[in-house]
Length: 219
Ligand SMILES: *[C@@H]1O[C@H](CO)[C@@H](O)[C@H](O)[C@H]1NC(C)=O
Ligand SMILES: *[C@@H]1O[C@H](CO)[C@@H](O)[C@H](O)[C@H]1NC(C)=O
Ligand SMILES: *[C@@H]1O[C@H](CO)[C@@H](O)[C@H](O)[C@H]1NC(C)=O
Image (cartoon, rainbow, N blue to C red; front, side, top):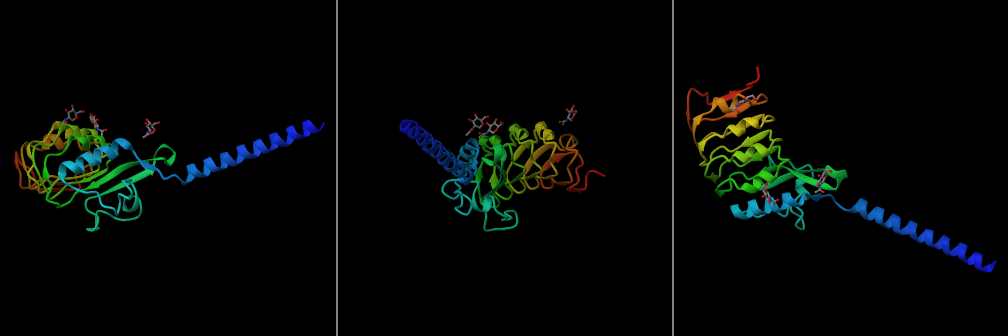
């Protein structure tokens, strides 16, 4: 009789312990911040190291890129303090994963080519690399950034023909490539960009008749 009583109380304590452990695990999970997709972190690090840039502690808190200004209400497009800067969305994989959706490296005298690691930032909707000294041609892998809506590359030293693959960026709303050294035909590439509303293309060596600026392309 007494033995049974002990067993009952033991099983009661065990289930209590299990419950406490479960609650601890759940609250730890709830408190854990969503983290940047590891392949995007590695790619961003590689890009910044190629360009000689440092991530700001305003958004790269304790080595977690999607933190601080990257995930609060900071408007990095209009705030000169945040440059270079990123923005992220952290609702992926049940709010455990953040993806980088914006990258701004504006007017920072960056010298070099557009790095191959950029193709891994596939959640980018907004890429602003304007007013640097980027050289080389536009890589065909840009087509992998299929979410891109804003692609701003104006005032650099980019050369060559625009790759046909640019025509696959079907979500593009705004394309700024003026003041570079692009050659060849432009209209053939942009004709498939059915959502394009703004195009800045002056000060290049494009062939054919191209307006310097086109607003509201979709009539
Ligand atoms: C980026 O993408 C390339 C090509 O898909 C791949 O070879 C490379 O390992 C990727 N880098 C990272 C850091 O994931
Ligand atoms: C997020 O979920 C997707 C789809 O289930 C999966 O393919 C991907 O690997 C996950 N990402 C990470 C970083 O765990
Ligand atoms: C435009 O789209 C059509 C139909 O998908 C395709 O055949 C053509 O090659 C594309 N043009 C360019 C320049 O990408």
